[in-house]
Image (cartoon, rainbow, N blue to C red; front, side):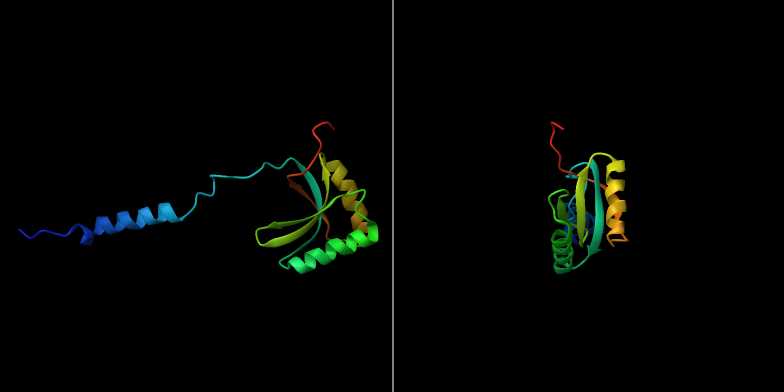
Length: 120
């Protein structure tokens, strides 16, 4: 009777392939990240970091950043310029209407992780 070498066995190769996939492919559910807890108004999204910085700087130069905090967030390959930290959608809607009147006609509200003082 002829002996088969284990490494040539089709199930062994399948086992190695599955083992490789389990080790190499990270588990995306392992660290889901923080849970969204509020709203921001997005005024820009682009794959260019330079363009996002320019839009943020232009907004700050024209309208300041004392009343509303500005953010550049990098999500899924896109640089997004977002304004504010609002606990309610109504607050974000008010700002969204204001920035649309200022010329940011594509502004929209996003549900996301925000920064806020626990004492508020």
